[in-house]
Length: 269
Image (cartoon, rainbow, N blue to C red):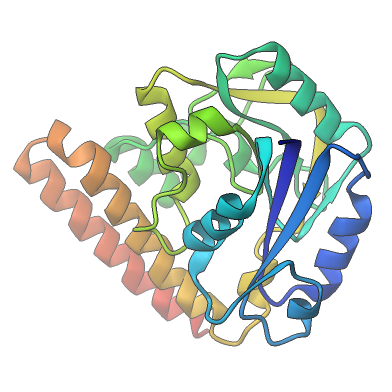
């Protein structure tokens, strides 16, 4: 068995994929598996596994995970740059903390600001409403002030998620009902239910050129509008609907449909 398997799911970001691969340090106990989701830009030539169609984030990563041999699995987006000691530091932390099911580092956008997706609370009706109407500071969904110390969080981003294989196996990895978006939140939610910890390690970082695959195709933005809202509905139905009365659920589903409409309109502008 390998110590670490790095799974990179790629879709039409050949240049960024090459830069990402170049930033990953070489270790004899590590393996790198590139899964291509039917790219049209030549990315498939680099891939270890070539999917015939775009299977989405959850299914595509699961394909790579099933072929991997590592005790730990790192899901890494192709539009990222990994800095020295980042992977080693997170891996060492997990090896010395067996109660941790998944961990991430500080994920920065190109301007140096924090990608809020790497440090999230689980959504709830009120918090999600405030978040998506632009009142993020009042929402518990994402954190505007993040402590610069190692600490437990609700949810991280699939752009950099180091997972203990035992934990991933216990929750059957990524839920394939999601095409793209929210599968990382769902995964963390399931881990928490099983008693595993989700940790944020800000001592090291990556840079994330967020949304590169979405921008790579003409239909990317409209597809994102559909998939992102479908993911919200799926997560709510699976994990939250049973906790709220019918009226609240009806308002939530109506709000998601409304958001899908506005996002679809915006995607064509």
